[in-house]
Length: 337
Length: 166
Image 1 (tube, one colour):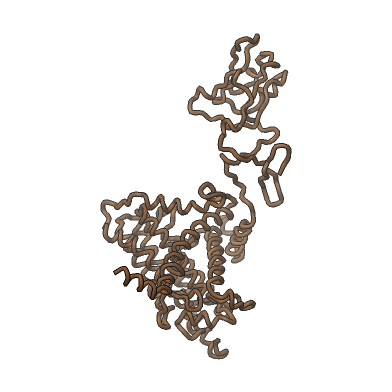
Image 2: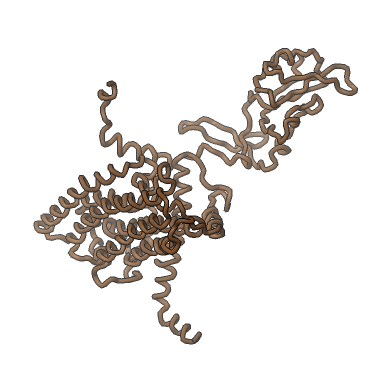
């Protein structure tokens, strides 16, 4: 039994490394810890204060690990009227969905968890549509007015944001002539797609902010109105899972944005050094992207749900269709990449 | 309505300006400090805890008349010939009139403000207790002292060391 296990591990060492360490589970959890810490420190800096300082020296780097330990040690409280099975189910499944989306992102040539046979971009969007479904399950199962209102808002926002995002990425698909994220990255070696797809990028970025549910689109979890939206009733480790789901969602969509518009693991075209191509550049781009996203989160006020939905359907959707037509014309006259 | 005359700010003012305004702060240092571990050194004229020099005090009672909060009582002290002021910090508003009035300059302000106690009686300081207090006795966590300076980019803290600034 043990011999068989050891030989299995030896034979599949590369696959297991990719799934368990990088860019798999350990990287995702590490990113969640880093992102929460970075958000707290960076936002504190923007607000001219210090952020966590007491736990782990001046940089407060142990604060998040302490928070996680505190949450894990706490009691799991189920509301009396909740549907306990679905309540637990949603909290366990929700972080898995964005994590499955990350499996399709290429981190370096050949460093990809699941190569979806040439249709990885479509699979990415197919998996992402599960997120609002599980979100409404958690909202309904908790049997609380705040959670159900938050869940409905989540569905409204996801549909208003996801359709423009998908149509904007269709522009990339047409321009690159492929659904495969790895090939899309390879075709950006000489020019990032943000240049030919600038209109599409703007639509994608605004829809992307709606998908990751950060300010100005944190409408489902609006603290001042809905306490914590669909997550209101969660406690302890289930709450930790919900917070993880938010940040893994941020990671997945940010990686998709980098892959579609900013050359993925390619370095900047001006100094395409083959030594540094790969993981280094994607991590650098990731940190720059989340810095900009966190800056946006404290620069603007939260939109109302009707404003966000109106923005999605009235402005982003026509713009994304216009982007598809423009891309077709450019492809027809310029010949694409 | 006056509101109808207000022009709606343009795209730049609504979207770009807030972002740049916020992002500029990424390069600035914080204006807060870690209080129990770092404490701001008081300014020269900070009105804090008041000390009494009983050797020069003549027990005239001028401070008691001057006090607008009636926070100063007079008590005899064993082995001395006058009655001396005791200060009730539960009433004191740190206005500094007693210090100004004192004809022999026996009362003096310090920069100590950490006077909170668990009982009301702890706030009444008898004449013999109005001695200079070392800050490490009331704030044992303190490790560093800071002084504030005003720079072009706003207030800034500088580490204070005895015998000079760092």
